[in-house]
Length: 259
Image (cartoon, rainbow, N blue to C red; front, side):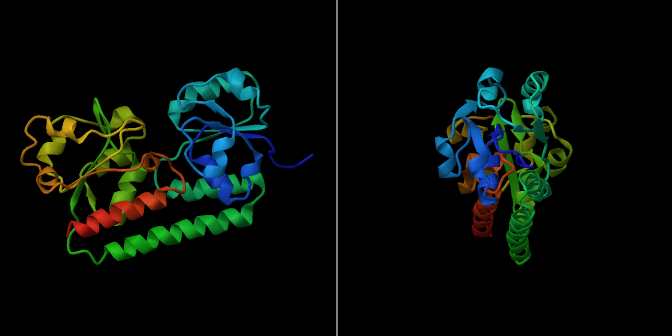
């Protein structure tokens, strides 16, 4: 019998991508319907959504480990625990949690060396962007919108990406303190009066609609809208996985062009 899990269900969409890098994707027997990468994972049985899922369908895969993330999946985790499932429930908040979770997953699947190398590579890529951002003439003011009703600004690792890329997150303090979405609610006029130079948006699984933003009250003088610097960010920005590095490069390019 193996010392490590051989049948893993990943209810967090970012985990198959990490396990693939650790050469452990072949152990994954179930994924979230929101999983988009890597391509090789998309043929694996989809057994759950994000917040909700069928316990029976998940357990039908006979997992020896189920991996979840965030407080949003708390009820799902509790239901699985009641049925005797072994769980790894991650709860990332900052960008640095990505590196920690990579190393933790490496320990879980017995791939310590690969995990450490991956974490070091990710850390190095982030540091390279941070160093390059030091040469920018200015740090543009950035508003990130995760949801539109109510308005919710980004989780802390998104704020870290903005900061690393050379921007100034107008709600950084709120993001750093707000683990829960309700703690990151933005009042309708707050982002307007903050006068962001750039707007990034990723509406948590729903297509971004810039016309809806333009119809909001008193937005005519918002610099980002005047300059046309409003950008939809790929939804993987809301997953604390390896694709955050791609999103960091996307943001850095926008911020460089806003100088």
